[in-house]
Image (cartoon, rainbow, N blue to C red; front, side, top):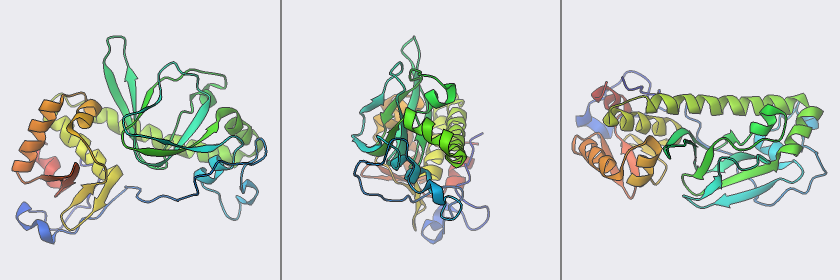
Length: 271
């Protein structure tokens, strides 16, 4: 059964015949993010910006990472690798804009997506968890053009030792990452490729969806090849399946942006 991933609240008129009157309500999706100047930090070694005022102002994780010694902003073009499995885990990443795909590469050459990260997602924290210098476990690739705030793992570890509230912020960010991974794994458990695609579209509705008069528009420009790679399919199969969904009046595709007219109807169609 395909999970509807809480894109809509229950109730209301959901018929496809009255698409123009539907009023979508997003649940659980975290839209929006803080915009900061894209200049490297020049703080003192190990210093954390505004941590001393945590009790009153409460710095965000973005502010914390930007305030660390050696932090900077990196822009990666779509399809480019951020790090490979086996690379030294020397930096921590916080996604500011765009989407990042994390995957495992097996000896057989098969690559399985384990998470599709959205804005404000934290990743690359393995060395912090092990407490020692480690190698990367995942393949991280820019699913779209991305902008990230990065900082040396040593600076992050020093900040945690100086202020426990930093550790709490990192734990919250890591918990969100784990939930994203669990959702992606659930998507890939569907053996039927139609159900797998639908589940993936619903995840994208939740994490990257923008409400409109038509339904939920996934705010990513997605090629059929990119979708195929994310869910372990082929471009030809994805093209055929998306065509079927479009012909049935469940989705529309405009300049690589997909709009799901009614996520609940889409989920029920393949339940």
